[in-house]
Amino acid sequence: MLSEILLGGGTAIVSGVVGFFISKKITSANFDIYVDQATAKAKAIENEAQTLLDRSRLRAKEIELDAQKLFESAKERARADFSQREDEIIQNKKDFARYKSEEEHTIQTQLHQINAQKINLERNEKSLISLKAKYEKSIDDVLHTLEHCAGLTQEEAKRELFNKIEEKMRGEISHIVRKYENEAKREAERKANYILAQATSRFAGEFASERLTNLVHLDNDELKGRIIGKEGRNIKALETLLGVDIIIDDTPNAILVSSFNLYRRAIATKTIQLLVADGRIQPARIEEIFKKVSDEFESKILNEGEELLADMNIGVMHPELVKLIGRLRYRASYGQNALAHTLEVAHLAGIMAAEMGGDPILAKRAGLLHDIGKALTHDHDGNHVDLGVEVCRRYNENEVVINAIYAHHGQQEINSIECGAVCAADALSAARPGARREVLESFLKRVTEIEEIASTHSGVRQAYAINAGREVRVIVNAVLINDDESILLAREIAKEIEDKVQYPGEIKVNVIRESRAIEYAK
Image 1 (cartoon, rainbow, N blue to C red):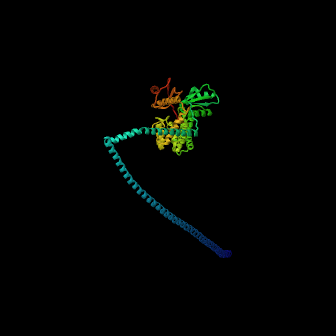
Image 2 (image 1 turned 135 degrees about the horizontal axis):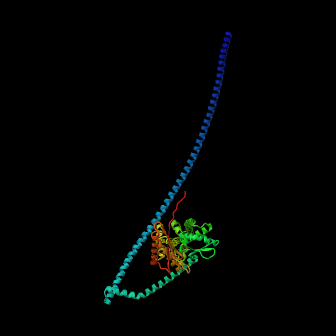
Image 3 (image 1 turned 45 degrees about the vertical axis):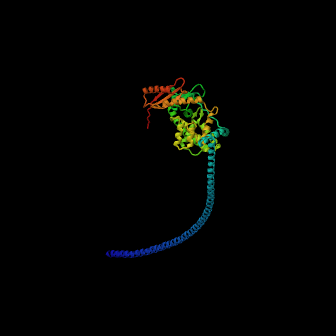
């Protein structure tokens, strides 16, 4: 049994030893294979790297050759350009030398001529001095002879001689003066008639007569009730906010918007038209539409001014002046539209200035700006001449424009052809039959003065003259003016109107005090 165990153990040991050596041999063989494979891969990588290195070197040489070619080409072009410029400089130097030589020769020739003329002048001067001496000696001899013959001194004889000559020549001189004066008058009249005929025949404009009312068309008469609103709150809000008089009568499918202020009336008309089209007529919506229309009109007048400036082709102008030109569309003078009058004056002045040898572009510019102050009279104190000069000087307009603004109302003398053309064109435009209405202008001045009187009082936010000037509606700040002060303010305004304004009948002063509480739900 023991022997069997020993035999089995020895067999196992032998088997283990044999297995160990076999395994070691196999592992050694595999290691050699791995080493061979790694060596082969390393050689392959090395060969590939060498190939890439060779290619890179070859590519570097190609790039270097290309760069050398480009350098040589640029060098040749630079050399050629330098050579060409050098030739041009040499040629310019030769031309300059030749020009200098010619100019020096010309100057020398002129100097010789000047010297010759100087010598001639000196000779002539000496001759004149000699002749003058002889003439004075002859006069002295004559005077001595006269003194001896007439028993007069030299001064007395001279005075007597001059008196006789003056008496003898006075009639002839006056005849000559009268003759040339009459000729000058006839020529001036003929030329003036020619210039006016040319200007008026080449510009055929129509005058625009302004009215005091705008008609708003309604689709049906039921809209009149909606415009009036419950207990008249809609029409009250409209008249208060828009500053116009809304007349709703028996005229079918129409209402009238009345105001002497063209700009305010135009905004009111557009606001009412949009409200009618929208259908929602109530105070909050009225305020919203009014603000939108007011903003659109401000943008519109700037665009209109820019279009007019482009059509006139008179150069660049400050945007504020352009806006004021557009605003002239909503101003009137004696019933004549201010913008139409301004454009007519500008065209006529340009034509007249061209005929008289002046600058037509400057004349048109002065004509376009001569009444620019009328765009400011509704918002600022002062006459349109002073306001126009102030705004034109603020934006550095030409002195001819300033002179034209002053001179067309006789506040300055006319200092240029262009200014004279503007003054003549202004008189021509205003004097045409039917162009202006004096009665309307006096009415407009009266209602404007009424509004200005009411606006000057403390606490007044807005003041509107309505009902053809028979009522002034004054809206006050509810924080600054209480109910008792409103009554006192109405009396003060009425008293001031009585003292300062001439008017038929009576004027109602209506002071409106309104307080609002506004809060937002967030």
